[in-house]
Amino acid sequence: MSEARDVDGAAPRMSLDEVLAFLEREFPQIDHGGRSYHLEAVGPLTARMRMDHHERHLRPGGTVSGPSMMALADLVLYAAILAQIGPVGLAVTTNLSFNFLRRPGTTGLLAEARLLKLGRRLAVGEVMITAAGSDELVCHATGTYSIPPGHTVS
Image 1 (cartoon, helix red, strand yellow):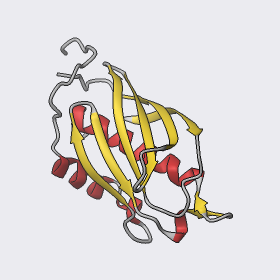
Image 2 (cartoon, helix red, strand yellow):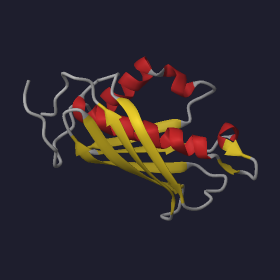
Image 3 (cartoon, helix red, strand yellow):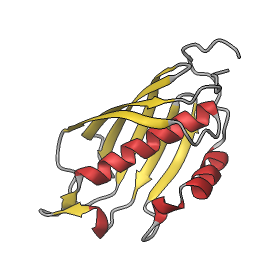
C-alpha cells in the first residue's frame, strides 16, 4: 500500500460522468420525488452542484430549509471526494458544521466544494453555498469524511 499524502491539485480519478453514474447506481434515493440535485462539475479537489428550487425544500416562511442545504453540502463534498479517490461507497461523513449566513429565499442554490486535505484515512473540505443569481454566501459548511482502509490517494 502506498503512503498517502496531502494532495495539491492532483487530477481526479473519476470524471463527471463516472461520478454521476456511481451516484445514480448507488444512491437512487437521492432522486426520490424527482431530481433536484445536479452535479455540474468535478475537478482537482473540487466539485460543483446545483439544487433546484422545489416546494419540498422549503420551510415555513418561504425559504430553503437548513436540512436541504445540509444535504446539498454533504452531497457535493462526497462527489469531490469520490472524484479524487474513485468509487468508494463507504467513504462516510464523520462531521459536518454549518454557518447559515443569510436567507436564500425561494430560489435554487449553487454549492462549490473544495477539499482542504485528502489523506489516507480522512478528507476535510468546505462548501460555499450561494442563491442562484447571487454571489453572496447563504451558507458555509465544513465536513470531514472517513475513507475506508485500503484506498490510497495517488
